[in-house]
Length: 118
Length: 215
Image (cartoon, rainbow over all chains, first blue to last red; front, top):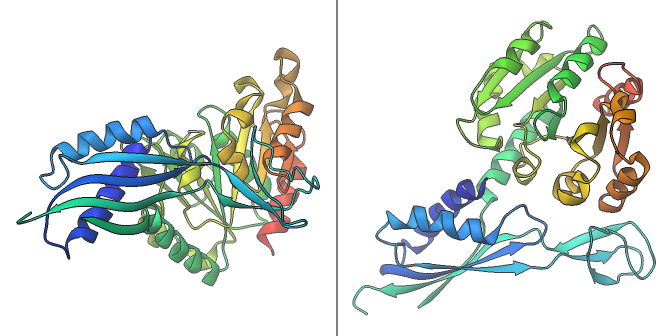
């Protein structure tokens, strides 16, 4: 269960990033989580709720998790395809030399905030 | 108002890992990170490896454990420098933990540094430490469905060791199928079948280690 470690670092990033704005509170956080991570969106949300509860800035924020499918590109025939059932092989030419192009992310896309004086 | 952030949550860890790796490279020490579920035989693998390479290579060990120093005590008996990291509840090692213990070693004098991660098939795979290669250990009693259920670790590793093959006759463990599934997940991976008890297959693993450490 390393979701809590992830939440700690992402709360730290958000707190730093919003410092330069006149933010009263954060209302929504958009997070992208790749299929090829070992993270469970539900657990991320529960861990976030526990951490956010104690922070004035974050306690009303909703964590929105978008799951990113696992995509790869074949180095031989350049085909881009979804990796399914853990088969890391190009479906077009059967070559094994592929590059993961999506699905490894753990990425904070944006936050929605209310500014002071809103 | 929407504020674009566009930052990777693991960037702080990855940055420290890259710095660790640079220090290891400057000191010409080859670093491996061994990962598996609890009870797959990581510490015994380490002990047999240390015994076999004694006199041939200078080896240091970092032991990751949630609370105890039992594994480090076992490794100490082999007369190699060993540092214990207790993660105090955390299920994995991360790059800052490795950075913190690096000054405990005389890196210049080492050929190989082996990091034994916390026993866990899931979390350690997400955290780069600055290692050269990752080694996944799977043991026969765990069952042959583990790679397909936990693909990230096998995708990210350069070597898969299938351990405790001396127990094959007692378990419904389909060796050929699991090897095929590991290769589907990671076609580039080297797979070795070993027993740390009978030492069957062990020399192939040692050869791999020696060859890669000297690169």
